[in-house]
Amino acid sequence: MNQRISNILSATILLGFLISASTSLSAQKTNVLFIPVDDLKPLLGVYGDPLVKTPNIDRLAKTGTVFLNNSCQQAICGPTRASLLTGMYPDYTQVWDLRTKMRDINPQILTIPQYFKNQGYTTAGIGKTFDNRCVDNGQDMDKPSWSIPYLKVHSKQYANPEVNAAWKKAEKLVAGKKFKVNYLRAKTISDLGGPLCRPSTESMDVPDDTYADGANARAAVKMLDKLAKAKAPFFLSVGFSKPHLPFVAPKKYWDLYNQEDISLAAFRQRAKNSPNIAYKGSNLGEISSYSDIPNQGPLTAQKQIELIHGYMAATSYMDAQVGLLLDKLEVLGIQDNTVVILWGDHGFHLGDHGLWTKHTNFEQAVRSPMIISAPQGFTANKNNSPTEFVDIFPTLCELTNLNIPKHLPGKSLVPLMKDPSTSLRFAALSQYPRGAKRMGYTLRSERFRYVKWLQMNYKTGERNGSLIATELYDYQNDPLETVNQSDNPDYKQVVKAFENEFKRRNVAQLN
Image (tube, rainbow, N blue to C red; front, side, top):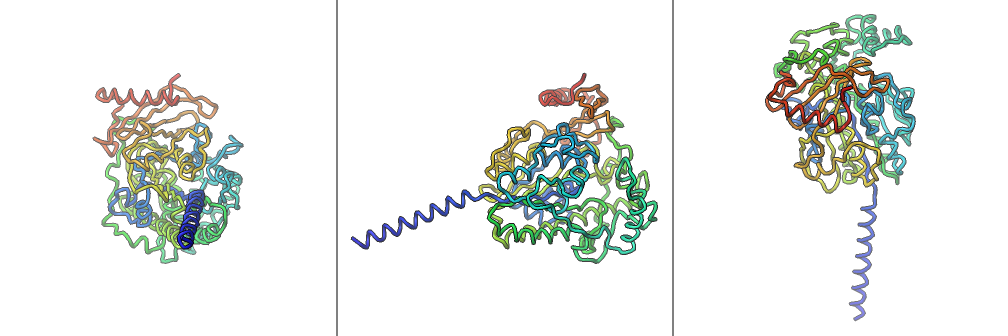
């Protein structure tokens, strides 16, 4: 009898221990590894590209949800990051350019890392998270967001010592001078420094940490060591700058590709019936600020191939740095308690419609990659329903069991992560301005994109205006956006549905 009682007591104690351990584990807060990538379009293996080599991002996708139809809120770095990191649309943040500082307009605005810091998380960052032109003095990367001062790693812009020296010398000559557009300043640097001062591409046989992304990834790995040992959960942002221009990457990543295998954009003209306002003032935009690029296109076929090659090489280089982070999570044994989210801040034109870089409402500029891997209760899947970057804030809250702030307009994507057949909205919203008094709003559904351009002084608070032009593209029948169908009577009901959605959202309304 005594032995039986002893066995019962032992079993009871063991059960109590297991319950306690289980409770402790469930109460443990989930870490967040936040990976912003500059100018990354969905030119990735997991998004179906047969040529580009991104094994580490593809590996992340095998444990998470790939959002195939995701829209940034404005296809330019500063505004899209201010929107994403606050969960608010550009018309609320009022950051529509690269000069406005987010907290000058909204001093009390709440950011994702700031909210996590307030909930007891250690928040830290390195690389590019916010655009430094739109926060603080450009150094602190929004000081209220971080419990640890934002880390800065200094590295070379170019590995070629002659190019690097010429670039730095020319930059000093224009230091302190103000330019309305940042790439005009860069063009002046190129003009002062000569044709080799600021090339758009570079391929040199150098270590990965010669450039910023490699240096930042290695510093982030060391930071993960410290954060994993601390008692508090962490929110760590590791921002990568490539494939942003210039397309510089160690030679081994260029060697992954043969230029004979690279094709020019399939459609390099303006869409039939499309309005002029849909296109940038310069079809080349910021890329013309580089010393080997003319002020206006078209570029030669060989130069286009070189640039596409450079973009792919820079993407593969960045992908290798992502791999270092994923490896470190596994070595530390914290991958099962860490949400990983990787996103590109907007898309990128690589010659389609004769366009380069971003700054439009076309698919190649607005569509942005996003992959979320949550540690438990989810299986890998792909979802084609329309999603937005403002959805990230509420999604991370739900995945880490934090209350979702009530002011956020976005929707948690957790239902899509659990059931890929689910849809949360009819269409995703984005926008892009043309000057101070013209704004283009666009809605992207599963099949169509509708764009509405209005004349209105949005900077003074106007939110209604007079109609300039509309666009409608049918991706089922015309995936390259070759024909604007907005005036086609066959699409009348489609346009009506989008107009009803604009009305429901109370944007893009006429006076």
